[in-house]
Image (cartoon, rainbow, N blue to C red; front, side, top):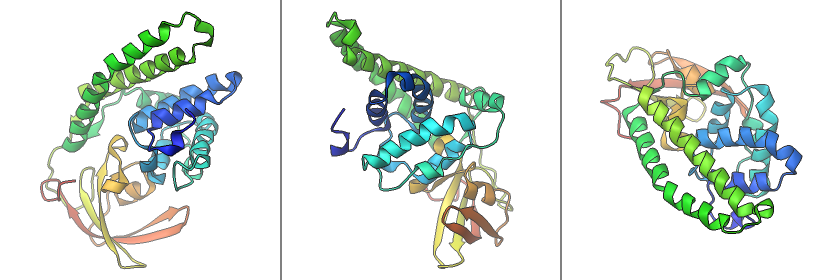
Length: 268
């Protein structure tokens, strides 16, 4: 895939290009981690929409051994000018036991989702299932070339099929076990699902975020992961309370102006 920089590629497309350029001895070690990363963010997610908060949130879920291959992938994205942001520096692994990470990533723990997040996963699942027939046809077409040793299109199609089925199973597992957040009217302290209105104490600018599960995070749309530094700093705080967050660019100081429960918050 030589022309990925000429259009608005998805993470899956860029991952294919990145992995195909690796030496065979490196590809196996890297592919597993890159595939997990891509599935977590979404196969159809556009690379230009990936934010530092997305990357940092994923870093909360991985072990240190996963950092090197993923930083190489993020560096590749920057080198190809597919993102205006250097994402690699924002990936830092949390010091968590491998067992805990494995359980979280396999979807064996119950996810708490907002109603919007649940609906979004249902839409993604339907879209992925609709792609099955197309990929099956691609495999059949590529398999028509009997020289399997040099059949790169067949290998690529099979890899996409595996990722597709993996993501379908993952979403089905999440939806099967997910708990949809209720409308708790208590606004004493910021909690999961609330929309929190913040004021930047240095600029006076006011902005708001809805606190969501890492799977739903999309800061560009005002959805902040509770696993992110800012999200963790906000949780449990009261209206009027000032908070400080240490970010790569320095210390960010803000004050909680208001806490809105889901029924009172503006639709996202």
